[in-house]
Length: 622
Image (tube, rainbow, N blue to C red; front, side, top):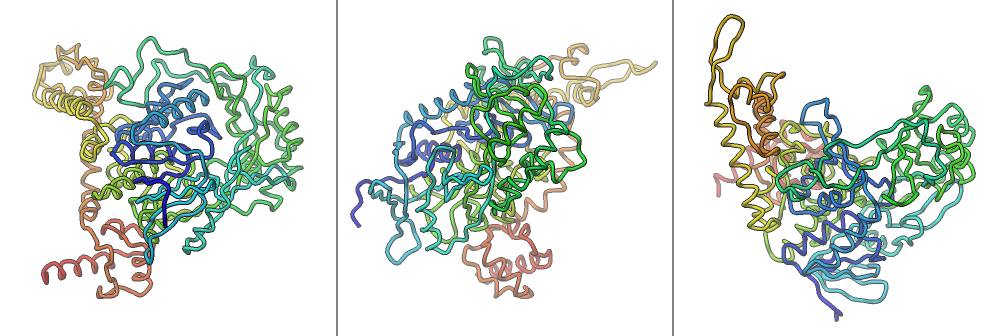
């Protein structure tokens, strides 16, 4: 076949997964094309205009630590910043920010269109070509007839693959409201034997802020000083903004009423979800309001957060009120809520169904098992959320580039980051509903904190080329400074009064006390780190040292299994003692490590022992 143009990597889709995939691929030196239907909608936030949240905020900091862009973008364009779970331990704290969705979009449009090695092409990919007599990617075909030769393709189609919008009994073929879906690419997947399943998500109506009565509503302000997501946002090496930042904008809280619930109950049969029009599975952790009313019928009210979408615009996002009710019923429902009695809907709420490929079809590199050089990321893997998409996009883009450049693949293990937890969950267990990250999904959560993401990943990022030499040096020096302070506090002692006695104690032992903070050490004539970030890390490492050691011991065995690699084409039928159904599961999943195999559904400890014995015998024979 004669091709019109050639790229190392082609990324399909300009959402949050596509952005991180394209930028990371280009950063690694691969000639990259980002193909999207509309250049000006790169980075669009079609649902909640927010970044971060429980576990999600940790993922954003991991993206940042690995050289990604999401953290920098939200630091530049946020309206309000918070750290969630501050009353709990550092393992479950997480930053969250309301975004100015227009400024965020503009930031990402500018970034993608001004990145070396990256071309943005306004078109639609309708087919993927494979090499002759091979299951390896060779190129793609666009709707405008452009034939592009490439070594790697990253699919990040979000909700566009055979997307259908539902508003009551009305259906619209669309990938997002007002945008056409991708109806031709699914044919490639059917032809190649990929299973396709239907998932569903939704978004609430947008409200005119000038028609809301704000006077009686509960204010929800941001944190002061506001936290930041990127280690590289000024001041570098801190996780807190200083003076000179734009003013934060408050969100407000209201609640549904008995009248709201009655309107929904009387019109349940007219919703797409309960009327039978939707067959796709919806997200358990972000349900529509009709789903909440049915599943929590005894709950008298549900919380609604009124969140601004832009700094200067009039659009308000009513978080917690997504629905597929008919538009005329939506007006009645929204106006039954305190503060919204006279509200005007700028655009109606809707549900959307779309195709996903089960992520068990992927290796942990996010490359498909059926087609070499084909990678998937984002909602197309059955996940929800901009952050989960961004994390997958980063890994898929890195691996697509490394494959195109003939280099070794890149992995993130469960014990290294929440991105690793997510990818392992997806590729090992699969999804029966849209996947969402929580800190409870990780057995390593004491170590995988929001504050130490840069320290966990900077070596890994540097080794593959995602950090510059200067960036690497800054983090290395920060880490060394933290270690020096910890060592100093372990050895530096003073005398303190304990009752009627005078006892000698170290700064380390003092700081372990719950009522003493690192700043309090100056009262005992101990010096304190000048840099806020260094002080924070030292204090966390001291106060939770006992818990960290306990977690480390509990997870040593699993970490050992992570290091035992399994051959890609291993013949499990030769392993003595494995039942037929276990052999079939292992051959289908193609686990890369013994730990990966151990996490597969139905794989017993006895089966893992049998594989270990087999590998040892094979090693001895060799």
